[in-house]
Image 1 (tube, helix red, strand yellow):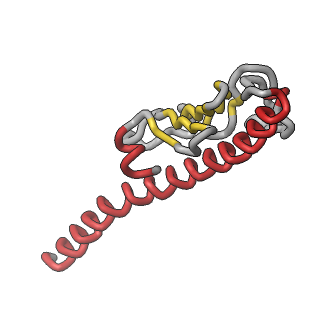
Image 2: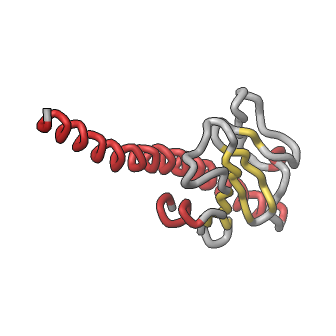
Length: 134
């Protein structure tokens, strides 16, 4: 009986270590998806800058079409509600606000990623996000 208890405790310890790591890996893949959008928008913003002399806040000005979670083109100056993030253009920055669903692990909450088009730097509004995911 003690051996079974010891084995079950061992599994409990492994699970308590593995589950947070799993959520971290999943959230990292979601951030990689946002960074892919950032790269595409950056390229389109660079072309908008070359053409018009300024970055745009309007999805319609970009020479690439982005789709929201429903498959509809992102348009106008509002955010583009994608599956995991709401992406917004603010001139030389792009923000990705984590949607409430699918729920982020409590460790990270509903963080905001900010991408600087000029430097290519991504920052996160939440310390655990910065430490673990970027």
